[in-house]
Image (cartoon, rainbow, N blue to C red):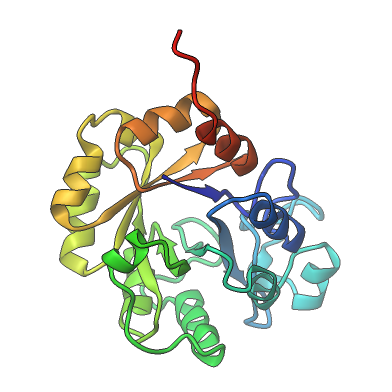
Length: 251
């Protein structure tokens, strides 16, 4: 099972930073997941929340790029540079109803991300599920917003796409859409995976990979591994990697 760092690595963090991404990969994570939004200048930045905590309530999408960088929020290009092809990079496009940067179905963030990846040379045939199973690394773009991942899917880039689902969506429902839309993976919540004992088998039968989010402890990591998932997005990928690599005592 792939062990992937959540927001680079939330432990020790700080999340969605160059330092977190580098630390997770150096410590043996198979890849990292990061969040992508737009600044007021239209630049891609890596930050989870739609609004800043200080000054309270200010929307990221209304802040100049340099003001965000001064607060330690990196450009997407900086994350690409530090990742440097080490394992997998999962880029979650943040575009949810009720947030100030929500713009489906225009998908400005998704289209900006596709153009940025094109400019960085990520063109060519899309990798297959078999390529991912072989551990080839690369870039995957995910989102709760299916318009976003469909925009990236259609951009003729050498990246895969994944449908990210809320806890309330069943694994079978997510797999049905992901398969019909030509995505390589379903990224399902751990509660949905653990509530469906045959989740891994269902994904394999559909010709898809199943990744789960967010694994917060060793016990949950062992449970989702036993459920047959291909990968787990973890708050502390170092702890999870070490625990999974250490045989459990026979008693």
